[in-house]
Length: 408
Image (cartoon, rainbow, N blue to C red; front, side, top):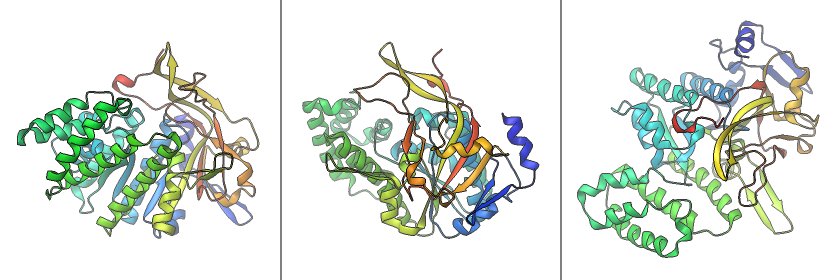
């Protein structure tokens, strides 16, 4: 497949016009920027470009987004990489790309989440570090999520030399599985009490790391305090948008990409009448905060093999899955009669986009259900949910590292 992709990188740009909407072939490996040049009018007028993925375990999605990020940095002075991961967990990765003596494998391990522990993602960090070594436009790597805080223990450890039984007790409480600590009301109450006392002293600190620790901990504790899954989902997406906005406000000249699942970068807003519930996604909140400064692109495939977690013998294990678009009502069905292997397609190309679907596969997949949740391959698409799509004819699984190797 890679040979076929590379082959058309030297071909003449394919352009198709439909109702004055232009679509064209692109290539994640090309060194000729004639395809991305066509997006200059978008890139120069935005502060954040959302770059999604229809699965967390697809190699080509990460490769394509790295190429776009490189172009934005080198031609439009973008400088920030916003990631769907916790802020504290990404601090070592930011130190690494800015030249600190931190091993890249350690930085990636601290991010913890398996979609970002891949060879493809490693190339992003290596490129950012090399760029920073010779350029004044210093790149930053910023986590914006508030879901887990696995690495907060390492930041707490840094404070143990200052004290104190408080820090030690909080550190020990994090030995409790973070996904279930809120189920233990006594331990959770104790954690909140200790954190409240520590936070009082940290508020006097001028250290940026301490301020980030405060924000991440406060967001995580509030997230864990929420009981309704739907409210938690909205809060998590709103936090990612808010954390991006906070960074932009604190750094008025910075522009960046928002690297996350399609769902989180999208402007989707779904109303469930039966329960009077509004489900809002990250791009929706971000558009409310920065308005037209945001542009989002959803990535999808016609046929794809990808990594995802499945329940095997009652435990989540990594597996490779293969799926293919089967319906004309799916966005990626357009690839069936196209000549090239990857296309950039503005949303306006699809006259009835609100009647279509696209692949929607997260960290988990398969026939197993977890806590009664059933996985579906597709989700409907709303008008203006994305500004554009990048569609691949065929994709392959990401190259996982370490403990995340697929189950055989």
